[in-house]
Length: 296
Image (cartoon, rainbow, N blue to C red):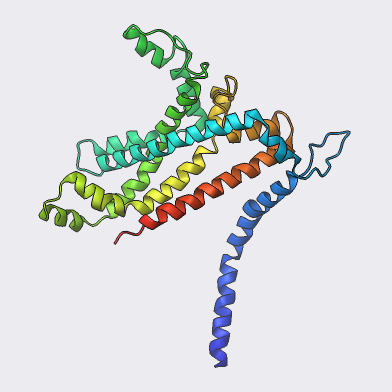
């Protein structure tokens, strides 16, 4: 009896020792920053002559009356609702296309995936050229058909949607890789059985293929949502949140407060709100999509 107890004990200890490095790193770089950030949000902004003081929830009260925050948050919600479903739909469509035996399949795969491996700064500069008034690619194309020049990034009505188009172009190829890997894991016997039963392509996709891809869809959706709340690089290069905060997003607003206005306490408050929003969205995603993940 005693040797069995000792064996279970040491197995338990060895298990904890194996996960200890991961637990330490996650605690150090994830959990501790979140707790420290929440604590820092309860203090005022300090200066060289005025130290920080405990102010409780005043930063959160000020945030409720901050018109720029609500503008930025609405921009981010629009940005997320456009980029996430469209990127996933395009990624699935591209994966279905290149999973078939088509001519030049390797070249098509490479062309779909190329935007993903390009550096963010390079992508921002490429699309900055596309959107340049008069000389940019889009205005040159429109000029051929008699269209007028348009300041795409300088117009509050179009600046945010210009960013949305660029991000969809860049991220779709990344999500496509996961769908392609999932499609290649599906048994060909399922398709043969579907053909024997006389099911059409759309019916087979809707009733068999897509349900089996739900674990991948859940994974891709969570990543897409997180990515939609962490865009900074492109904004710095292309619009800097302008004009009049029309293209500013929540993480960029945090960056501005922390490193342009040096209001680290308010930036910490905004960060707490960002983490809270992502946590709520992720919980909802798992609660809703998890029910459809396991298809039997």
